[in-house]
Length: 139
Image 1 (cartoon, rainbow, N blue to C red):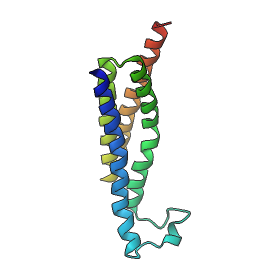
Image 2: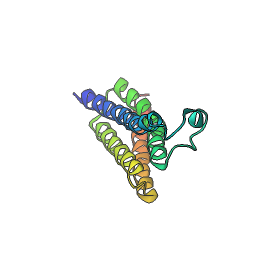
Image 3: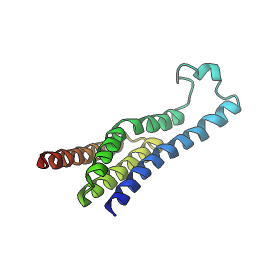
């Protein structure tokens, strides 16, 4: 049963990335269709996009940084059989990513955004230390 909850956390993290991509599309597509942004102006750089698009784009890009380490660690935990502690860490990490993304696409308050990032980073470090400790204890 613990595998189910870790897989659910992985899916929730994936849903965040897909949700941000959808949100980004709802910003970009209408602007291009209305001619507010020309395709030639965005083909090679992002300068033509307004601030709101940059925020959403950066929030989406962030889903391919720390979460990649989460996915790898979660895969290892699934291989070894996740512990309840790892399940809690996984869900707390995912929650921190949702908070981070929400701050990114709303007021983008840098201190709050960094706080959410730092919480996620620390949770991920504990997650990985736990995995390494489990691996070393099995040698």
